[in-house]
Image (cartoon, rainbow, N blue to C red):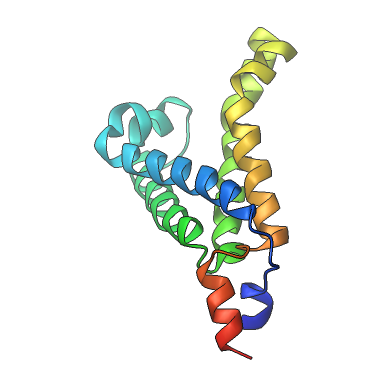
Length: 143
């Protein structure tokens, strides 16, 4: 099971996707704690999610931990799963209202970063951490 989680290929360019995805999620997670009224609990309350303080901290914590794991390439596939869920929930809770109120093109414009993060996470779920990752080191040592 561990071998399936850490398995990756020799692609050296995967680090680019890892750096983008990991840095954005790490930054967003930190901001949920630095600016809870606009990025964390306050935002979650505004969009009508239950237990906004708990969820703000939970999501922020996952974004920080998984963002760091992705930056390191440590259990990359596993770390991408909660982030995919976070992005899907973000789409469902924030972008449907944009579509209804402002239309398709505003939805596409307002969700470009969300799409990039979602697709980056899906890429990492499929490919793993790549050549320059802790996963690759663990894979080599596990032979």
